[in-house]
Amino acid sequence: MIRFFSTGYLSRYLLLFVITTVIWMPSLIFPTAYSGISSYAFNQIACITCQNTYLQTFLSFIIILITTLLLNKIAVDGGLTTKTSTLIALLYIMLTSSILSNAHNNPVIYINLIAVFILANMMSLSYTKNTIPAIFNASLLLGIASLFYSQLVFLILFIWLAIIIHRLVAWRNFAVTIIGITVPYIFALTWFFFTNSLLEDSYQLFYSLHINIAPVFFTNPIDVSISVIMVGLIIISTFGVLGNLNEKNINLRRNITIIIYYGIIMILILVLFSKSTISSLLLCIPAAMILGYWLSGIKNTKWYNIALVSSLILIILNQYINFFIDA
Image 1 (tube, rainbow, N blue to C red):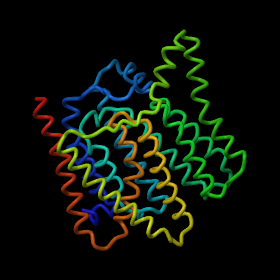
Image 2 (image 1 turned 180 degrees about the vertical axis):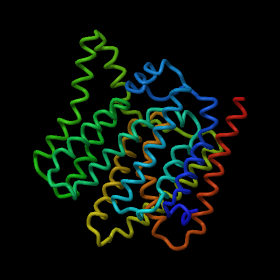
Image 3 (image 1 turned 90 degrees about the vertical axis):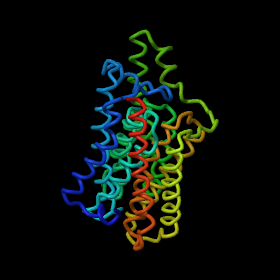
Image 4 (image 1 turned 180 degrees about the horizontal axis):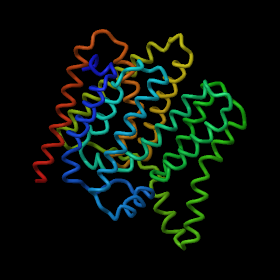
């Protein structure tokens, strides 16, 4: 499985589409409404789509496909995989479907699409002569992403760390991040004011911005099994990557470090603010990239293949068991 998706033939992309369609088919037929943490921007999308869960789920399906291809591209551009690999694309599809509840209709799907562009800007700083536009774009996108979950504003720490890792420490670079992240809020609050909904919409926007460290657990046995396998693979991969961070290619080493810090800061945000298992899907991007980078570089893939195939079977089984229950 790992070697098969380490190539980029057209058949691999077609198979990825088939796998994604098979996993998503129950949700496309029996879509569910989102019931997690209040999300201002996602609520606006729900209003635009007239609360039509079929339309929302189909839109999420298209966004997942786009995010998958873009994530695979920036991984290739960043040197994490070979130019023909589709492995990270497969891992992202699996991770985003690794839990059942509302997994295919939630704000994280939109946030992760935005996060791909944030990471692309941060990973390209080594090759960029004028870094301010790239940093501003990443900060602006982060501000937009935080309109879905306000606690994501703390990812500004990730942007600052990326600036330091690329040795671009200058007051202008740090200042432009603050400007970029506040621009969406200036427009949003101005709109609230003119529509006489400042108090109500502001509460909805900033609702998730309070500490809540109460743990959230999976209750579905198959969810638990999938999570144990995937988390185990991610932990092994992370320690494996950290133990081999002596890559001679300095840009690749910086990109790997940036991805690891993205994952660490996201974990801290989830620990402090998360109140829903859906929020854990925010870790899919760094997890897929680290896992894909590690798996593409190892020789003995037997047990990794067994774990991934088992996970994929359980993911599909989980979706269809729920499908027949609903039917």
